[in-house]
Image (cartoon, rainbow, N blue to C red; front, side, top):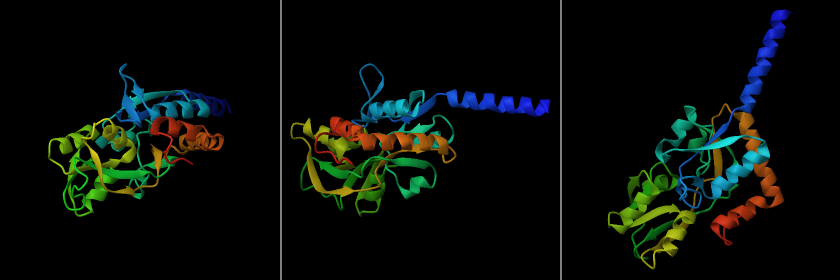
Length: 240
């Protein structure tokens, strides 16, 4: 009996320690306005504000970790952080490897940006970030895909003539186009891809997923999520 009591106490202590552990939020830090590194060297953007709010509502202590996009899922699976909150669209392919919360951004448009409105987006050379749904779309579209590890490189490829256009989230491209003083223009048609943007988690972390899901639901119901989306993406942004 004494052994059983000690075992129970040990399990309770272990559970207490687990619940007190810091939850690590993994992001890229290079995809504004979703996430970026500010002048103080800290993670900033829509997902920083959202993640901090979700952690507060879920009663979690959280810290931010940055990771290159092309290895962001493997490093989640291997335990380098506990969630991905990095503008990641929910897809069936990704869902076979990791789990997702519900979406916190509705399915939004992807767009082509080029130096000329008549750029050949269907048969030309298109740049896209590696391991994105946009890269997958271009690869099957008949165009020639040029993949780059960072979003900045996809823009540079168009600017220096290596690519006819870049294909990415319109929310990411829009501020770049607006600040380009006419250098960049939209080309082709907007296309909706994926099932919205959600938080990625290891498939075994169902309790943590449920906590974040509940917090996302609460933010949708009280209107704070819509207000946050409009703050970072503009009044015309798609909301719930």
